[in-house]
Image 1 (tube, helix red, strand yellow):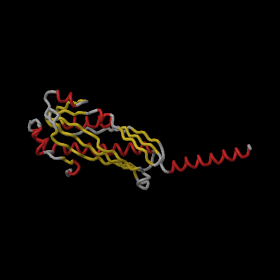
Image 2 (cartoon, rainbow, N blue to C red; image 1 turned 120 degrees about the vertical axis):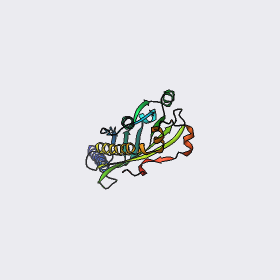
Image 3 (cartoon, helix red, strand yellow; image 1 turned 120 degrees about the horizontal axis):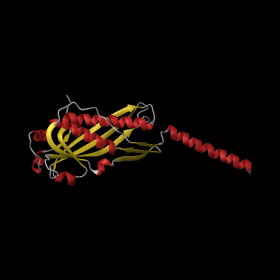
Image 4 (spheres, rainbow, N blue to C red; image 1 turned 135 degrees about the horizontal axis):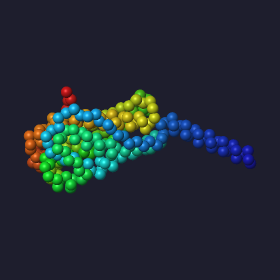
Length: 227
């Protein structure tokens, strides 16, 4: 009986080790990352505009979670994007006020417009999925532009793309690719925001209203050529 028990134990151990090895080869793991982004100082003249940036709880606590290939992935995007939008809008607009909810923004004086950013989608590909070449991340954003009273006026959409070398640990590679996607989106927004028709109204001293929504469309920032 002891001999049979020992063989059974060895067989179970071999199966367990084989399963662990197969999982490692397939990239199975539990990865948790919290990408932070240090943007270089934007050498630009802020627009003489009074506007509000509304960072709602949905954005500040945004997390992407999924199970793929036997592994779990959790990407805490909220804190990094809260700082990113503060930096980007702060560099673009001279008189920017930051709010955590729309009610507070509507009650504030001196606003010409309100900007409310949202993360629409986060997706990534591992090095294994790109044949070991690189990690890739895509982040899709929607920025609602509202009147000071909170009425919808326009919508800005943009997508950030980022990649990182496939070598290295999963957490570090995913973080680097996410940071690259955030930098890409930030650069597009900084360059293209002053060129938007609604921005020209703000620079001219006008305050956005619901009447402006009749002629507004969804403005896709990344499809505007950057020159």
